[in-house]
Structure formats: C-alpha cells, structure tokens
Image (tube, rainbow, N blue to C red; front, top):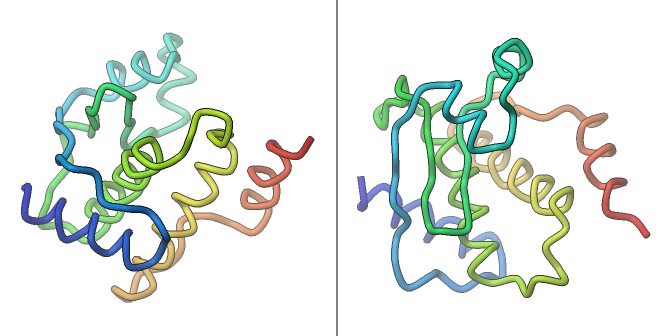
Length: 137
C-alpha cells in the first residue's frame, strides 16, 4: 500500500505547489458508521444517506471503508482525495485551512486524476460552487 500512496502523493505534488510530507499516513479500514462517527455524524440514517468513502484526521490517519480495494481505480481515486487532505494539512498554515476550499481542491485533484484514468468526475459544477462559496468572507 505504501508504494501506491507514495505514487499518489508524488502525483499530488506534480499537480500542486505542495511539498511531499516526510511520512505516509496510517490507513485504517473501518465500517461506514465508524467512518461517520470520525466525521462527527452519529445518526445512522444520515450516515447511510451520505455514503462517506473516506476520512482524514490531523493525527496522520486516513480511514477508508472496509470495502476499499486498492486494485480498484475508483477506490484509488478516493484514497487520492484523502491523501490530498493529508498533504494539505502538512503544508497549509492553520489560517488557510478553510474546509470548503480544502474539499474543493481535493475533489478537483481527484477529478483530474480520474480523467487521466478514463473515469467520470465525482463532483458537479453546482457542488464546486457551493464549496467555493463556503469560504468567502
């Protein structure tokens, strides 16, 4: 898994101005409800409707669903998305960590990677607009 993570982090670095962090994050596979709990969502119905695929926390851990398969290109794009957050946290000072902008960048990079691999984007233009506007002052 670390070879894939290093390759994805290298790809992120080649598409951004971010420096590669000195270590790769921990990866924990967990059930969807635990993934939601890590994200602060404890209502199971809401959790099921969100269909979260991954979560990164500042303690250098990426949580992915138990059905994550490293050999699946879609799943790799989800891992790339979470690795973008890992790289962002390693590079951005706290005052630049607007979650909307960070999500927008992660989805944009995920969609660019997906395009290079012949996959459709995961984010709509409307969703991009909503994330971008969430950080405007």
